[in-house]
Image (cartoon, rainbow, N blue to C red; front, side):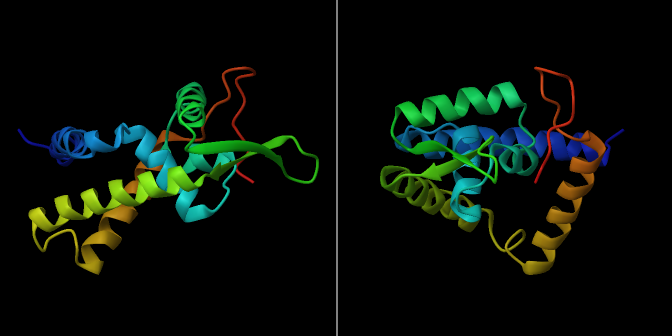
Length: 151
């Protein structure tokens, strides 16, 4: 018996494979691309905001940011009133890489055809993503086991 979640999982896995194969020329992984897209859209987001937006685990995000920083795509800087939060700054090479990867993503969307590009389809997908995010709960800091603040 097919279920909605089973179908969604299969589609997500296949799309991930297509995306990875398409963006390989940029040298970015799908997860790196996701993090950089949030950094581009939100302009110097905190790591907490990236965790919330991507659903990544804190340790995974930390590893991704270290790799992106070593390659010169992002910088981490202190932020917030007390300087304890970490903000992610996209560098010029990072912006160039994300623009190339985004154009490749748009080509995938073009090949998929009209469904998924209509505004009402995107709204449905965004609503599903929000509900799944709520089911997943808050990101947990492995250091102390407490939910990570999103402010």
